[in-house]
Length: 216
Image 1 (tube, one colour):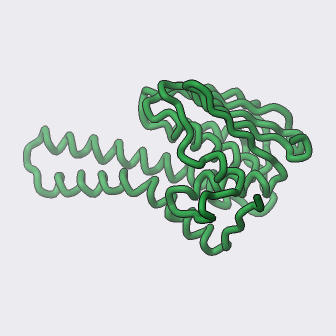
Image 2 (tube, rainbow, N blue to C red):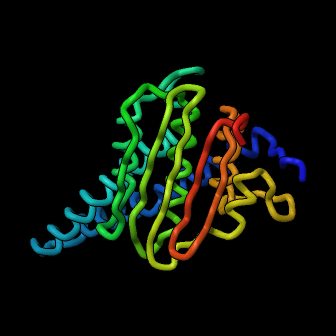
């Protein structure tokens, strides 16, 4: 099957929709907290509202920082990104205590799009374990020889519907929407930096491996 090509404007629009989806919930919570502060006189309730605002603001900031690296330009064309920065934003994305991140990535200045690919694979892995678990991120090699593996392990771990075909650039019915743009975008990024992605799902384990396309 031929790889599906999405118009550049549509790709940008859907990616923006994805970012908005990620941040609208904590921003809405901030607004709710401010409304409580404006109307509530009880000191205890005002403190609850302040705690909600602080937590939601931190969540919104963490998600925006992650999206900047995972979906945005994050520097000029051909720029490199420190993998330590990638770890920082990925840890910030984890909003609960049910999920543990094991980061086995040596510090290096890696090509921008390869870091973007790694972060997008992390998003797929996190979504595969909604009940929590362990996500292990590993990278070997550097530059053109870089390979990566992201594993999600947890109760009833499973890929989102059609995630594998979306990463491969083969959407069902030849259509992409705001719900399916993320794994499709991961595949676009992979192909842009000459990498292929293999997706595997087993009992309570999902693995995503990316390596140079020449080795596939």
